[in-house]
Image (tube, rainbow, N blue to C red):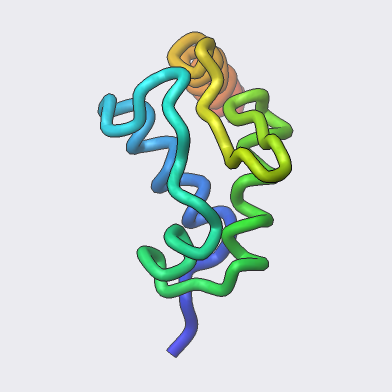
Length: 90
């Protein structure tokens, strides 16, 4: 039995942001809590958070945690628009 991949966790967190379950500026659960919630390793959670950070959706502060960007809704709108444009071209 394998746990979810980093991209599956990232997709789920994106969905939580879209649905307003994670509010802009909110602190995310820590790596250990996320790993338990997803049944994944902490490394997989770390990789998922890195993907979100590269997209500009979260910022991580050592000793303080991971925080959702205040701009998250705008960033997700842009990401969704890019996906729509790419799909239209294929």
